Image (cartoon, rainbow, N blue to C red; front, side, top):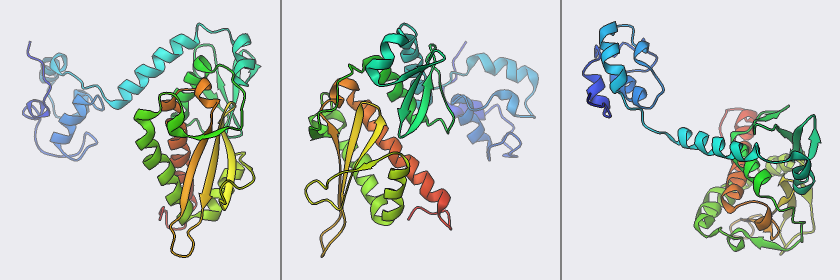
Length: 272
């Protein structure tokens, strides 16, 4: 039986009317959605049952980024299931409540049960799930040293340095430039603490995405023709408590969360 991996092969069997009754605007889009696992053949009201029976076993759904993401989560959950939460809680700076780890992230508690499932009284941010599971598994319990270093100096950070610079630091700087007061008010709402300015920064604050993974954020406002600057420094101990990739996910998550909050509170629904 020949496998179908090309949407054009599916398209040939469809009515090709582009009626939109399947929920997408065209038959070709429907064919692509089938390969992505977003639709099933039953979604087309005009396909005969015999054609559905003939095509269904032949369609090979492509793996998506969501598939890969969920596979990573499943693997991490299997490792979490083997852990003794009584031992884990003090090591990672969490509380054990009703058999669940209560982990404070940005001043909000997130709960992980023994199956590795995450819940919270607030919105469960997808960007936090993988770093949180890694943190539970990997955190050595190293205490903060107040030895602040650039992300690139942490173990394993080399391959993520460019991403961290552009998608985290520069993206956050752009938000601060456009919505300075709002951005720093949001940081304070999420538990950030102002600290003595570093290197003459106009704003310096420590934010805790995870209990033993502090970020130091420094922002210099544009002045006399000089552009603004922003950096995110990590306490050197972070390298013992979580991996570099998870740190990029945490930082990027903060950026995306702030973007969404700014858009939802803007009068015209625009970011800039």
